[in-house]
Length: 416
Image 1 (spheres, helix red, strand yellow):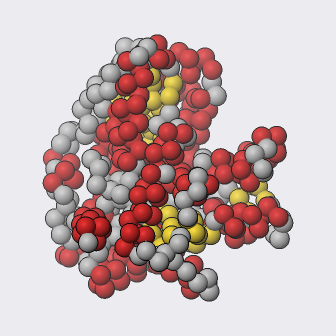
Image 2 (tube, rainbow, N blue to C red):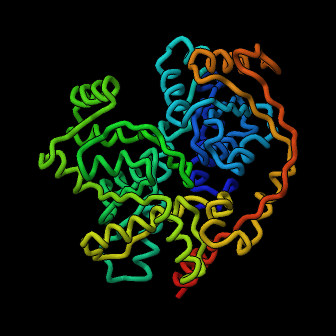
């Protein structure tokens, strides 16, 4: 799913979303203006920027955690020159950035002043668009294997949006079997489905940075359905979680039984992820990015635990491996990395634009207002500092994905 302009699955939804925004603004909706404020752990930011760059009536402000996205992911965001795009490095984690976005939406005066909109999977359109590839892949797999009655899915996830789309596809009637929630060391979702403990912990920095998330925003949507669509109960749960950092369901309860019926889960740490990348390269000549490898590892763990997979399992490949050359190189050897796609290889010869803001919601909102209402080149040093980094780095070594081979094989089989 990573054959879009930023080589990440999020292009599927965000290319559509950008066109939707521009169209509805052209009709006079929202007074013809929109300020998109988003947070990214890596891929959402660049996909949002490429979906919104140059769109009339749209200002795009993307917050990302300083030092916690890959160099290529940061370059993909900060090399975009369009005047309506603003990249902001925040000293903190993705969860900090996401908290700033959420608090901004809970500020009615700010929201109305800048005409605030969302581009994260907070935006329902993102989840809606992501249901499409569950249907597409189901039909392609069953075209090739007509005896199959259902298809399982393993989904590497941090913010729960991608796998939630599969849940909704299943509720719409698609014969989806098992939905496996695949996590890295930041395993709050896995701990919930295995122990009933949705307990917040500090974030571990891993080789799959787009999944380095401690609080999964879309999980609240699933919890709503788990309560039987009871907003009062959901509010009680979320108030408890916000106050204590913990939400616990009793082991053996009907709620936990239902949750485990809806989802399976697995956790893959760094060593397991690297091993999967190495083995699939050696055995199948297919290079996985570290996020996609977590999804593949999850299937192996799930099967090892004795659950027989009675139908095909689709692992969602979420990003091009060339975006993570260090991690992939650790698995297969830096000397074995093929050249990156041209679009990625050129990034390190381009100028960058980025701003720095402290990890404070009020300061970020002041920055957004200044940008939207005329823009600034520099603000006070102790608030937000414009950083025009024009240094050039060595052209990266990276890898070429075999995803196109899979698409070609599916197409060939379809023709047969």
